[in-house]
Length: 415
Image (cartoon, rainbow, N blue to C red):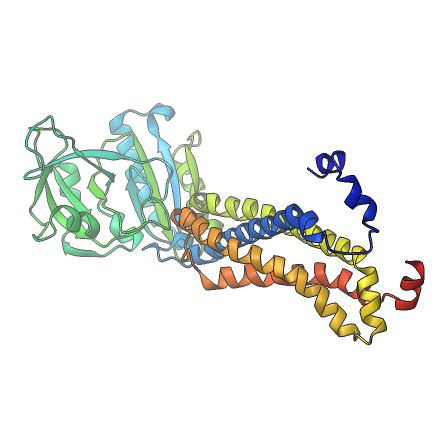
């Protein structure tokens, strides 16, 4: 744009312009100022976004998941991969449970088809009496898992009504279920969920709800109370995740606990092993990555905005040397000159800040599903404003200070 303007000059005014005045400054600065305001606004949006994500990381580590992720280890086994049939697999799982429970650091052991916070979801299509009228109606999709009789105790989850899954349910293949409070409230808001029935196929044999367990995090640390279904785990299944609760942080016991499995079968191959803390960290990876990414772009944008401000104010000072010299010759104080120059730069910052604040509110709403803090978190906004204001003030102060040091007599003689 400046090149196009320079290629079509208005020659008469250009010849009359000595370069000392500032009468045409508004027209020449229009685009430059707008770009600086835009840089400031974008910087603020990215800084706020980065601050929200960073704050979310800290908040996520303090979320009550319903269980202690630091004291839970998990071991995934697909026994058909280890050449076990269903009966032999069931025997090994039971032997491993007893072996693990014999260790002094182990408090409880359980089996489940799906781990809370794991990346794979087990969805069940449910038909509930009074909610659908024919097999053509769409079923409700609810995530869930098949669990053994020790599952809720191992995770430390409270059965708020009814009972948990027991050994008889598993041995006899009874069609019973334990649901979360959120599921009970969703499908039977004005009734007791205990005794209610649902089917996984239209016209199929119903499952009867025998217990309601407290809500807990099943998919992500930041989720709202989630409807979740627990069914009995078969005694002869070939796949299971073994959950082990330890008295001290589980990460230091994983290798030793693996050894207990290998004592039963040295050639045993695991699908995966680790701790619930690792599962939580994996679920939080998008937040961590987002914090790094948005924060990095925010710092880059801040640098660009600072350079832009410095350039605009520096250029302004270079064009106003004669004006500043006259002011100083007439007795203007150094502080007054600095304030005059700063006022111009900080006006641009203020305009960009107002625009950026509006955009940051919108950005916060967009990011809300990935946040563990309020999208309008005052600390995040305050920190972003403070950083931007400090950097902008520095970018303005350097040329302002240079302007204040102008030698009025030398500058006037040179002009």
